[in-house]
Figure 1 (spheres, rainbow, N blue to C red):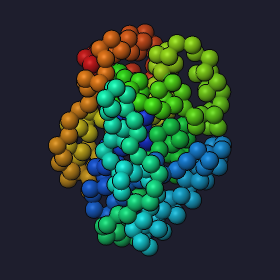
Figure 2 (tube, rainbow, N blue to C red; figure 1 turned 180 degrees about the vertical axis):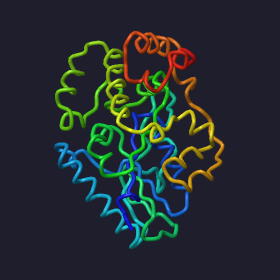
Figure 3 (cartoon, rainbow, N blue to C red; figure 1 turned 120 degrees about the vertical axis):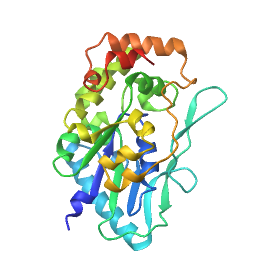
Figure 4 (cartoon, rainbow, N blue to C red; figure 1 turned 90 degrees about the vertical axis):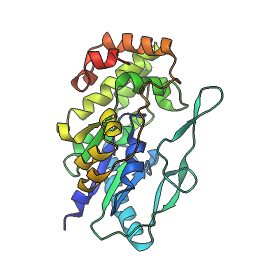
Length: 271
């Protein structure tokens, strides 16, 4: 039994639907999906980060088989479908915090264990894809960047803290871009460029996940092909001001970004 193939990497740009994917995958028998259980201290450099991931998979697998317990970001005692909620002022605040979570389901020794981290895993995909099955959830870049602008998180500034150790030159380059939307579009380009390393069937669009009721996640876990949830796309959410959306579209269309490998200009203009 090759447990390495049962340990699955899940990543994607922040606010692309990766937490929803975890929520859906946890509905699948003999499967556990952990939402952002790791921390920055585990990634002081790329090599240590890769080893931390291997150690963490082993630790979580042992704990889940022993007592059904694991570490993840949770709301209450569950992994939610969305880690942010809207406030009266329109800004969305995180509703999750790191904690222990119990999975009350039978697991065999070879259960599927999915760990999701966004930037951490994205910028290590070159190494990780040689060791694990890796999947990325992506979303129309207009809605992705619009969502960044509604939350309190480093990505709202157009940068990512983990880049300080994984890609320090990129972190500094992004810091030198004065205009926020320019910086955010450049960051989106850098994220999407990493997903070029994956075969097309390992890059799953948020839009397809919603339309399929989650069954497209069968590309990652065959048993997930039976999912049939009622899901609603948030791509055109009224929380995104139209003026902001139009400004994002203008910046995206003016830049030759890696996101064009995954979305057409018509799809960007349609939001």
